[in-house]
Length: 203
Ligand SMILES: Cc1cc2nc3c(=O)[nH]c(=O)nc-3n(C[C@H](O)[C@H](O)[C@H](O)COP(=O)(O)O)c2cc1C
Image (tube, rainbow, N blue to C red; front, side):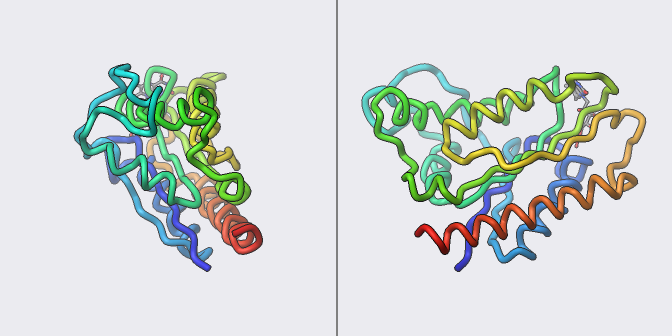
C-alpha cells in the first residue's frame, strides 16, 4: 500500500536552507515507500481568507483561485511535511495565508460538526515540521509551533515531530549541520513508515 505525502514549502527560496532540509525529508519519505508532491506555496497565486463565511454554511470557499484544489488534495493526502523559515517570529505570510484558507475545515469540524476527515484517516495521518531561524534566541520557534499545532488540529493531520535549527545567520549553510540533515531524513522516514503501517491496519 502506498501513501500520499504533501511537502509544503514556505520559503520563497526554493534552493535555500529550508529547501535543502525539505529535500532530505522528501528523500526519507520516498525511501519509506510514499509518493511525495512538493508544493512551493510562494509560486501560487491566491488570496488570504477574506471572511466571506461561505464555509459557515457549506463545505466550500467562495474564493476561486490557485488555492482551491488544495481543499480536496488535503482530504486525500495521508501525511504532511511543512518546511518553513521563521519570519517576524512566525510563519511567513504566504504560507500563513495558505493555512488560513483551511477555515473551510475549521467550520466543518467545529461549527457544523461534520468533519471533512474521517475518524479512520485520523488514525494514520501525521505532520512533520521542519523550521529554521536566523537568530540565536530563545522562543524562536514558539510562533511557528502554535500556528502549526492549530493547523494540524484543524486539518486533522496530527503533529508527529519537528526538526528545528536557529542561529542560521551564523551557520549560513544547513548542510554543515549533518545531525539536522540526518534528523530531517530519519524523522520523515519513520513518520512515513508509521503512516503506511497504520493505513494498512485501519483502512
Ligand atoms: C522577512 C524576514 C523576517 C525574518 N524574521 C526572523 C525572525 O523573526 N526570527 C529569526 O530567527 N529569523 C528571522 N529571519 C531569518 C530567516 O529565518 C533565516 O534567514 C532563514 O535561514 C531563511 O531560510 P531560507 O533561506 O531557507 O528562506 C527573517 C528573515 C526574513 C527574510
